[in-house]
Image (cartoon, rainbow, N blue to C red; front, top):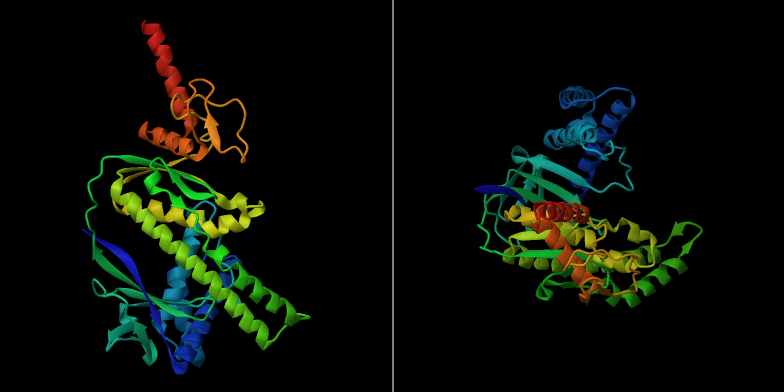
Length: 382
């Protein structure tokens, strides 16, 4: 059995190739904004309708004919898919205009729009870009997406088909509770994901770059010194983010390889952005770690259960009795007044999450109600 995956590589285009890529992006962005204009005019543009408009526009504008038709068609196809998802997926907004200064470069080519030879990626219209091949492609790529990040670095993401490796045999489950002091507390201390604080370690350099930016920004104008300081700060932020992402991937792989049932707290860290823990929570990247764990577990064929976080910290993992009062954030030890069980607050919550998932539920209330019914049926039978 095969699966479709993406392999990303660093690109190092020269000045000529970079200028050609930026010009191609300007054409694709223009077409995207024209499609948004059609939508705002009261029409529902389909891909067939947009393709006909593209054919007409290319015949009338020499500027569009100088670009690749493959990249322009893929831009309209992506727009059509995004518009369809906005109608079908709840909470998904409609496509909006892409401003030149804010939108990130993103070009997509199908197989007939690129080729690979002599270690270089050759795109339509003769754009040749060297590729840093850090690993081999498992098969011939079917498409490639060209992107540029905030630092001006170019990347190529190839869609390839790869054989699915069977997951190791595992017969135990694990519960995961998210936090700030410890990013992920599990039922087994050996699989905890500690908070490593990569951004905190470069706080002094970040503060120095921010002070330089503050001194050299006057009346809204940005000098060369300001731009250099902003680039230094962006590099530090990206370095910390990549280190955190690497740690999350290694941890998620270890958890998935050793457990067949993965109970994950369905935690939404959005509210932490307005709290005093915002900076530390952003550095921990709880949402990215959760997404990585869930995706790896699903790909490996594990049973991944998302458990609602309500009352998980107030419920005893030994007798499932609930505390009468909410635990404050400063209280890190859980004590059950019914059975006398005492444990770390986050460890107890992880065990509650695992117990809920093992009983085929997704929230604590369902387990309490089912246990209550079982006791009632037992008393009637007696």
